[in-house]
Image 1 (tube, rainbow, N blue to C red):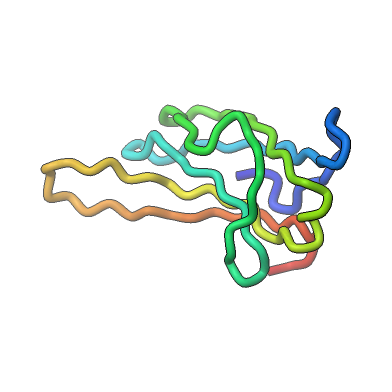
Image 2: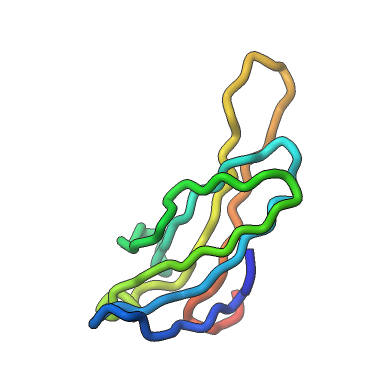
Length: 108
């Protein structure tokens, strides 16, 4: 997910900021990703986006915007995507991964 340290921009809605993100799917076995926003203690923070769960084909890139209330920006630290593993009858083990970007601009 890029950028690693996204720039928070004003949005067209008063009291709301926008973060522009891009996600590339390099995993052939994964098609779905969940978008989440967390504070420093990994507590969920509400946000708005066109997607909560986004479908991205193998070797495809999708851009999306995340809208966050200005009042939540003091708490918001991590904007993450989690790969969603589809349940099947196959015995093959798949690993779900979480990739996060820092909104506070500080190194992890």
